[in-house]
Length: 153
Image (tube, rainbow, N blue to C red; front, side, top):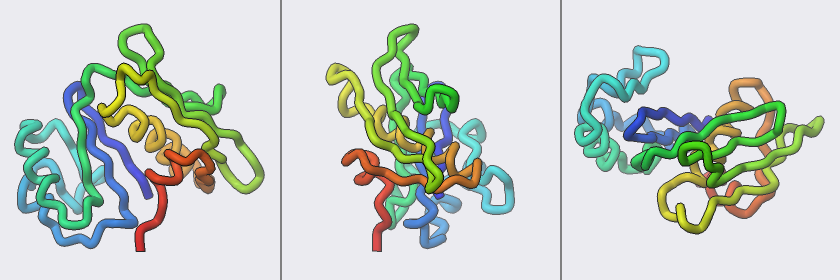
């Protein structure tokens, strides 16, 4: 399961496949990370610096984070994509096709001027999270989506 949690400042990614429940996050920011609460991550409960430091302690990298840089990412099921915007300007997109087997992510791209900000990862996670919530398989075929969503042994 892939989940994304966002505020105006911070974006947190959680990959449940990597999580080994060592609770370093809970110890580092118990207000933010509460396994008894649903959703278990609430980024509004603590300052970004505390959350970031707690995530840095995650030994498996099941939790990672980036700053949002003012970029908004929206999921659009009708258009079969997620898109990133800087104001009104589109700066990235992740496209998928609905098939009987699941949602096939076949393309992810961001404007090169926005590289290194975690935007492409946010785009892929938005699609994966929506598919998982809809009970649909995610089938990454674009090389970036494969890299982001691959199962680690």
